[in-house]
Length: 375
Image (cartoon, rainbow, N blue to C red; front, side, top):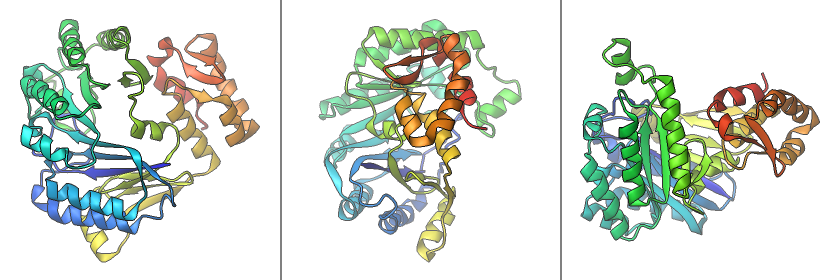
């Protein structure tokens, strides 16, 4: 099995925290979609003859695409690749794009999962973050998708926002749970260098939230969603039973995936590739047949580190048998040696043959994974 990721870099405007590759040069969209479809045809051998089990169209803002764009993409994919009849097919969307006519158009394509970038239900904070929608639009968009027949809807939330109170975060969680989405992704706000948010902090115009408040909000997130019977299956991801993101989970379980579009990443078990982060250079390279990506071949130590970083972050943990069988006794012994302090501190545990984070360990997961990797 394998997945396909399609990167759509176009946005109407940029959020102040975003460091993903994106552009407001929407006039280049037609040429970009043509290049994207051509890349899909050129790279059909990257994942061999694997059946496609997941397709994920992310961005940027993929809900800026039209029916003509989606037709070109899906027509190419289904012509070139073997797509499972049970494939999970996701579209990332902005709430203000999801008006009734647009949602009806989406239903004419094989999308069966929608991921809505809500972030918060606080209108003042949405405005500060330079989001295009209001809380009211987000709620309306969610129910519009539900009424149109989408039975697998994910929403994105963000916490650790400047001056965000426990009451405000609790209100966001309460509103989210009242909508009963099948999936919730919740991310702490990060001040990425070069973003508008980072510059505001450096200029002392805003301050990062206190670390103790951040920990309290994360704790509140975990316990509130657990009480609502959501499974905490990855550090930032929660789902109702059987509604985990199959596409994202394939990244964490080492499945092959092909990434097409500018800045998209690919992985086939022995190498990984990443496309050039430039719309103009990407289109030009596809058109002229020149190289549009960099490639790295993965030795056993890089693959071991990837295995650690991807498996430990999930509720399933790292299979010790798979660790030993895949990477040999030396790296198995190394991993267990480095895990011992965390096992004693009960931030890691061994459960059903897997090395797993405990709830205590989730809060320091970056440090734990750093200790386990080969350096």
